[in-house]
Each structure stands twice: as C-alpha cells, then as structure tokens.
Length: 196
Image (tube, rainbow, N blue to C red):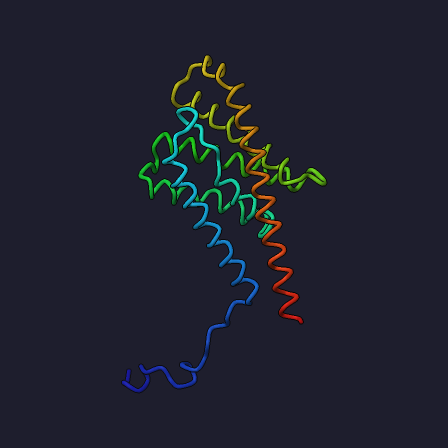
C-alpha cells in the first residue's frame, strides 16, 4: 500500500458527523444538571442525622419528581438509579447494606411514582410524592427484614416510620411542585422573549 493511499483524501476530511437536534441536546443537559443536583443532595443527606438507622427524609426524590414532570418517566427512573450508584461511590457505601437499602428504596419509590403518574388521572405531585415516600419506606423495611435482620418484630416500628414518611413525602411533593412551577414560568418567559 502506498503512502498516498493510506492518507485520507480531502473529501473524507470534510464529511462532518450529523449534529444531534438542539432539543435533544437541551434535554440531555437538563438531565445531567438534575442528576448532579440529585447526587449532591444524596451526599449531603447522608451526612445529616436521621430518625433511625436507615431513615432519611428523601430530599433527592424532589429532583426525581422534577425530572418526571420536565423530562418524562424514563428520564426520572434513570436519574433515580444513577443517583444512588454515583452517590454511593462518593460516600464510600457502594455494595454495602446501606447501598442495597438505598437502591431498593429509590427504585421502588421511582417505579410507584411513575406508575401513579401514568395510571391515576389528575393526580398531583403531592399525591405522587406521598405514594413514593410510603413505597420507599416499605421497600427499605422489607429489604432489611429479608436480607439483614430477619426478625418480623422489626415491623412493629413500621407505623411511626410510615407516619414520618407521609409527612416528608408531602413536604417533598410541595417542594417539587414549587420548583416545577417556577421552571415552567421561566420557560414560558424565555419563549415569549424569544418570539417577542
């Protein structure tokens, strides 16, 4: 093979790869921004004192709800899963019992919230968040009992924990509603400015 044949010709160098559409790039950028926020909240929440050995208020679920409204169910589910994995790497709990409980809780909560979003007509973010908070707590209790403690007496603690999960779920839903409402107003103002 000659040296000239090994060199790419000028027409090959001028061929550019197709660029992804701008809306797709915007969605990916929004998802990455929400993921970074969720990971930061996850790491911060791990340093906060909890109400029990595995209970946290689930503030990162606020970001999952925002992703659900702004980007759709698939994006919200992947955000919830990725947040747990990356957050666990940052705090050094990857593949520990804490990680397993966190992953099970986040995954079940996300699936319940997505199912509620798709199947219950007119449900609000408050209702979705309440269901997610309760599902998160139930998933963690069943995970702890099945894999680690294996004592059914553990479930005597469930009622007060479910009560607290209901309160935090409501608060997280209210926060998610406030954030999504503000983001929608910003998007509407931006589109009006662009067309004005």
